[in-house]
Length: 567
Image 1: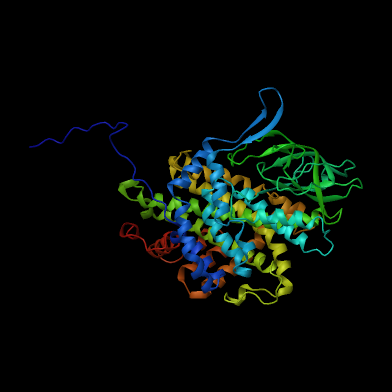
Image 2: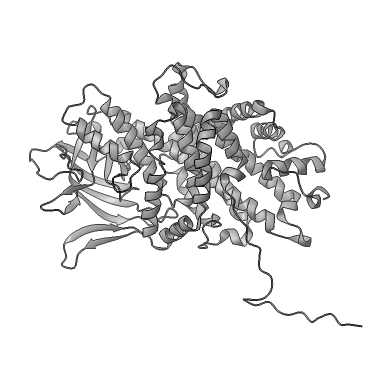
């Protein structure tokens, strides 16, 4: 009788090794993204842009791009404050990976697409579907992209004004052409300086002052344009695009009027050298996440700037930028969440647990994934409906929305109002939902999910860490809820009203999506979304076998395996 071989111990090179999960191209794997593409774009636009989107879906998961992400995380930005001889230099050093990611985003038109306006009101949907694919692979270069997008739209509106001076027009045109360029050597990014120590998100406490300068200056902007006649002095507490070439900022005039200004970040000196335009970098922020993104405190002393619009209209003027950056914030949220869910799905397909069963075969695991997928789909539709409204609002045409479901297209008189209401709702709610959802993605990978590894296609911990800023950037949840309720009512229920409105609008959009083709999964998603994630009775009905089947189809787009259906 043969003896059973004696067991051998595991080691660093022997024993069990987990099969590596493979995260597929999200355009092919993410059913929520596929349905958004089909619902919010006419079929001819879908057919035209799909090959490029599919190519980009591979690019963002390529070894080259993921190595750039790893490099940007390993080699964090730092400041060279002084030269060898004690002269102030304030040189910001960023990694090669960060700079390459910036250039790739510029070349791919992440900002340029809506300004090229090839697909009119659908150009924004095109832009943000590509942006969604890009989100978790760009190491937060989309933060300056968001402000650049907002600044470009802001400058374009300034140039539409019949009262714009002939001297200022070519200056703005030069900056605009650089903000919307696809050529990295030409392109600019923009900052957006509002946050100060007294008020945080409340800009009414702005302390930075702007005064007309009595002294002329011979220096010019780095594009050769004249510098502005206003001198800005103050302190900006947060600057999240410190390596930008220009900024839009708020400051008070001598009459205490809060106003908006445009200024280049650098100016020429004698010879070929350049220097910061009246800015010194006090220090870089040490943050929980978005570590590769250089965020700084700035001392502003005699920064030469141009007044934009009328003095005293600062909040109204800069709202153009805020509306756009809040939409960017929201698509960043669902983009990061979508990648987290993709990683969790890939892991569930290969990870074996009790009895050698894969996680994809465990009904309890599938049920949690289905619940999270329902929430993700709802916020995806809210995001891209708002994106569609943004695209329509920018066209200024009475004829729009041809080729998509008529139920998605509001009357012209209601577009701006809807956008005004939904933007803060979307920004606040998507951020909170994304953070919660990504925590579930971390947990879904067990200890592996908690690791900060250099394999960036699987590093869901980094995605989760970076996402926590989304509920703070561009206004906290409470700040945004002020847009919807009176001060007295806000004391009790501002946040609840905001999130409940999102639930209702999301339900309508999911119903429109389900009605489009009668898909059984889309119908079930709409029903569960309306009930909410805490109503466990609504998370599936019928026999255990039927609930497992539907949960599997919601989570993975396929019926469960025999191992799961027999449990």
